[in-house]
Image 1 (cartoon, rainbow, N blue to C red):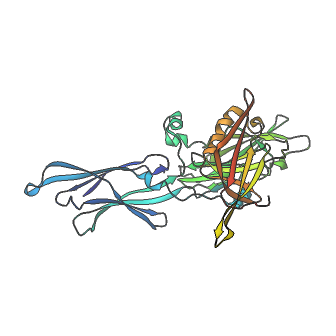
Image 2 (cartoon, rainbow, N blue to C red):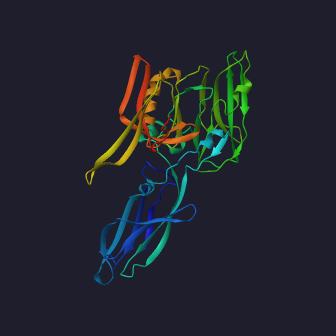
Length: 390
């Protein structure tokens, strides 16, 4: 007989533990006894069946003098979701406006069962949980700084990005997690002008869906904010918040400072951060490219022959002085480490989103003053021969 001693949380982070504890009581078949975990996706497709390691414990005497035994299985169920499918962003996302529900949260149905005896027949299936797996996962240190409450932490956008100075045509998105079932949620943008006035814009509301990650396009042009400027009245910054149907702010407010300057050298990147959202960042310094073609040659029947040829392109990107992109350059230097450490990074290039690999041993931090920094990285496109003539 299976007894669930500890159920996992409904919402599981890939990078966090979600401990499950199961007890199975049995008397005669301990030699052949096994406990299994079975996982289905949201479409009820079986993803896999795993044997759970158990610790056998003897507890007194059973019938006919046989020892009465039971098995305890204690395991981290999140370990079975760590290799869940990766999210590959599509360039069409940049044409969206307002709030959009993403497919970043994956839902699974889990059950446990046992077999005993030489027949290996399933017995006593028990539903373990319907689990929503949230990509990423914040560190325990950051979690503790938000009073140790997962829900309190999720009252913020899924980014560590400091306040940003955004160019007029720069892409940017914010992601947030909805754990309440509101009738609808609505984005609000507050514009602040250089003459000291402000204006509130309430965008179209969308239906809420509990246990989902939503995104909102925060770009200046995507939200047509230029239509609210005049020759004598420019937007200096704008503030984005999310409201529920009662008009209450349910997510922290984020401020974008408008940078009207033009930058000639710009490389645009997108990456998955450590807490499950995607961040966009521009490197506005001088960049360089280097091309290399390597060949494997040899002799075949006395004739020199080229057996293989590989083209690789190493690229350098410089952030430019960070005070032109962020309000707090010192915090921005630390924040860029998120980009460098990400295992899912992309370059936005010619209406495409191309996966990249950052060479971590080629990171340079330049410092001109106490709080003036720039960061330089080397990277390659993960798709071979992309941009051969660029």
